[in-house]
Image: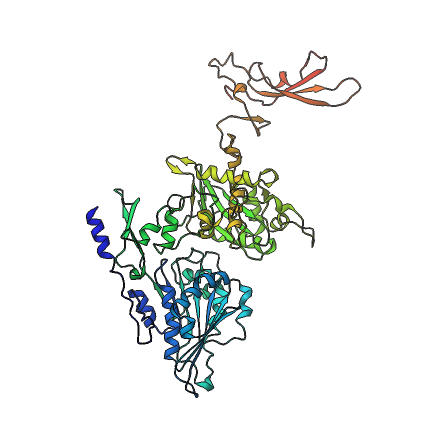
Length: 618
């Protein structure tokens, strides 16, 4: 312990000496290799990702001022620049970004700060005229705020919360101030800082850290190619993991000597604040905030806290197994979702997902069909509607949908079920009374908590990224919902794929399995009834089974026959009165057929042997 403490103290730098220039201004020096590489880059677009308290916000503030000072003088001798500082909300701007900015550039030294929205800081220092505008943008509709604007450069603070549409629009607005007639900008572009985002973030998909969805079109794939000339920087982790004897379990953490901005991180009891911050936090929180790892979103209380990514997510993509039926869970609406899975040896394997934005069933149903054709070789004989119908009829393809999908729309009186049926995809409503959310969640929890042969009953492919993010925390309860009654309906689609998974589990029989009943279509060893050479769906109960008799001469028929009760006097027809086993000698087809008996009530009973040949056992 003393050696570890000594090594930790050695990693911590001494308290910094704050240097100032002749005017009393703080002299900034980036504390870290990655921070320095970022500032030395002249790329038009630069993005840096790091743990919390890694110094990226202060560095971006100084980057604006440095570029403003390096701007070439215009015809009037002034170095004019205009910058936009963007964050997702105005409260976040005021409480965090603006405070960091004014800590470096106070009003009494650099000029008046206007607090009305949008907030503006007009800076004057010698021949440097720098205008900085603070704007809140968080929705694609906010693109209009950027139109008809001209900027030297734009800084996106907390870039992980900014949609790609806003970033693309902003990139097209940088470089137009000062105007060409006034000399133009010496440097122009966009830069942003961010903490580790979730796997569905557009930045990590563009950088290739996360693979693109399998169903993404070629046009969309071209939009997610990292352009040549853009720079991307990733800072070291704040801590290092200390593993246990098995080499997998994390026992503790220690300070990373290569972590950046350590000079400016406070100490608590002689230790870096990182080591105090992680106390009482989940591993997912530590991975995202301190270890700078791309993880699931952390928002509220997860609906499925028993989901463990290391246990329930496969290391390699899962593929379709043609020896087992394909189950599809469907959620309808304008944000439809589909989850594809197979129940193999009582273990669920989720092999893929499909998600739509602002799409109806007429668009989504063909997409589901195409996914099945492209990802499930051997399931269909061809690719037309009749092949889907044949696979469904033979039980190789089963679709379970949201019961609300049977609701008609006002425009054409058709339902989502009707649309899917027109494409050969017959959807069956998931068996859930009143679409109870509690029953749906219980079915998924039952599978997540289950084990089979020492392995979890739930395993999903890493390609099902949106579902993985939903299970890991994107699908969470509403804030303030301490009773955990209603999950939050988010705008990222996590709730939609989670609903599709619930219908998949219920349609696959997990609702009955968790109450002790067998699943529909489960294999049974009980013998079946046979009538006229055809197998009946009704299985023989245990007390109805005939006992094999060794002697052929004394062998009984053992066949099952139906008893029908003749109607009372004055009425016609008869009704079924049950089944009985024929106790006559073997080969009683003629003697047993048509014979009658009288019941205690006086009505006549008809009986007929169901099978012609004699048999030793049933």
